[in-house]
Length: 202
Image (cartoon, rainbow, N blue to C red; front, side, top):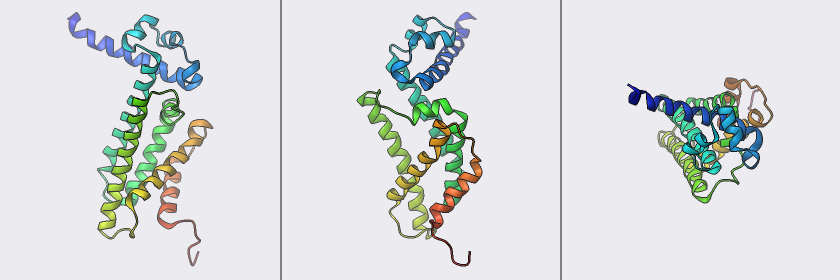
């Protein structure tokens, strides 16, 4: 029986360490964060932390990877359920904003300063962003082919949308602002579809 229960205990410790690390790194930053503080916050010994993560850098990078994986899975699984580009974009904005608000500390690390990571991790982050942009560009190209939107460069438009999404999250992460997720998403999508020029008759 003990052999069957061991994986659950190990998983619990790893999660405790992960959650403690998110709190400490988000508050202190990579350089000021101490493994001793992470261990104390997780309620485990410092040696236990090193059993799971050989270094502070590896723990930091694993947090970013885990957070981005969680984010990507929640985002693209929902987009597969919607076919209309406008609705897809609205859901993309909403899910991104909701994720940022719900996991504020984690989002601060994921979308913050990555000067502390190594080249391998930096390449991985770039590949994740490229994958997101490629998927979004594919959705735009599909709608363009069907005549739902005008003749634009799908990848260029995907980069613009990704930039807008990131900019909207800054006040939530770094200024602790509370936002109306649905309203903000609808406004952003309106701007993308109609621009900022005044419409005739309005």
